[in-house]
Amino acid sequence: MTLSAAALIPLPVLIPLLAAAATLILGRRPRAQRYVTVTALTASLLVTGLLLYLADRDGIAVLQIGGWEAPMGISLVVDRLAALMLVVSGIVLLAVMLFAVGQGIHDGNEQQPVSIFLPTYLALTAGVNIAFLAGDLFNLFVGFEVLLAASFVLLTLGASADRVRAGVSYVMVSMVSSLIFLVGMAFAYAATGTLNLAHMALRLDDVPSGTRAAIFGVLLVAFGIKAAVFPLSAWLPDSYPTAPAPVTAVFAGLLTKVGVYAIIRAHTLLFPGGELDNVLLIAGLLTMLIGILGAIAQNDIKRLLSFTLVSHIGYMIFGVGLSTEMGMTGAVYYVAHHILVQTTLFLVVGLIERQAGSASLRRLGGLALASPLLAVLFLIPGLNLGGIPPFSGFIGKIALLQAGAEDGSALAWLLVAGGTVTSLLTLYVIARVWSKAFWRARADAPEGDLADVAPSALIDESSEDIAFDERADVGKMPLAMLVPTAGLVAVGLALTVFAGPLLDISERAAANLMDRSVYIEAVLGGPR
Image 1 (spheres, rainbow, N blue to C red):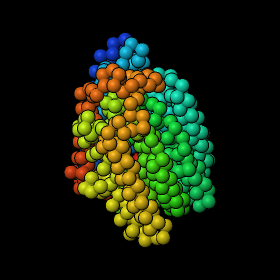
Image 2: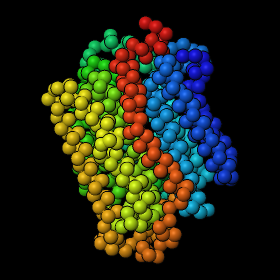
Image 3: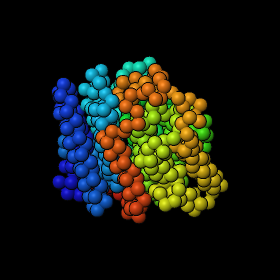
Image 4: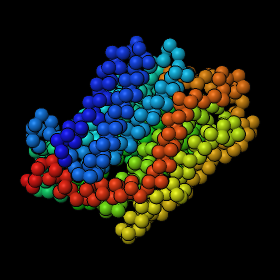
């Protein structure tokens, strides 16, 4: 990798951090804030796209901060997996920010906390990118903590009782996760004398298997909480639905996937022996089934989608737990697919709230007739999430099920059956939303005559109920909210059209992950 390519590596972190500082200075000039944020996220996306191209063409890129060679210095590493995650995250972050700005312009007022939203959002972007680029456990922890700080602010915007309660619960769970992560880091450092991932991977080979499994178990608990893997997922459905629509969308799409990324990196690089594979497979199966059963019981679309989010994390853990190149290929592809589709669905829910005054299935109806465009925007990612061919969800699930069948063990076949059942139940959940919210007449809904008092942007103003016909600005969806949502729907369709190239990249990423010597030699400069 050339020096110029290595010089690009810190930009996905530096650009949003510098832009966050600029937007804080411009707190009294919201239009300038928006211009700076759009420019920064666009520039960051372009840089990450170039990094993906270079990483796929030339291999792993490494930047040793300050010229200090690993393992003494800080290493920032871009391989195919990290670059793919950066690009997909950049697409989602830009689209959600445009949606949030459009919503704020149309539905906001002078009381909306817009001056803090964009700087915090940019800090969140930096935290996500730090986590993907980190070449050591400490800076991975730093990325998580930046995410935690920014997430708490975004969750509690508007300071309504529900949001503060959810935010406090989220922070408490995240702090427990961070504490467990610190304990895992301490154990790993005590056993190996290093926190650099590549160096640790070499030294863990000399650590007794029982000690190695214990360290992996502690880290798995920490990462499993962040990824919302059952039984560590109970916090998520109560935390995400209370936030504003764009905040919920970016949380659902990205934050759990950072935890999944950490599990993939730890499993393939540090603990490749498969000592806890059965634990991962059982956790993946339970996550799929219990998550989707929870979704069936919901009447609020946000909570319903939060449970499907938990459920589909199980597919990714399924692929990781197989410890095969095909399983890892399916997991990498499914992570990219799910980030885009889940984010899109939550943005569509924001449009439903804007159009119909509620996200409750007890109040919704007639949306297909009232807004055919909204119906299409929901149906496409909904079918994609359910795994209907030829969408990317079907392709990702087929890859995972095929990997399970090739493994051939009884537990793998149980996962194949569980994945199939989960996919069918996901289709049932999507069909239930469609039949109630879009197909039936609103007059047939039990509370169809009621709506929230006003569209809510950042401050929660929806607690007061009024008659649906009396709601202000009813039935209008601003173009600034429609365009980014439609753009993400188009990107989701592109995953289907270009499924071959994306699967090829996922396969090459999986090959690099399964052959950890490539990563180790790139970071350390050769065998140690």
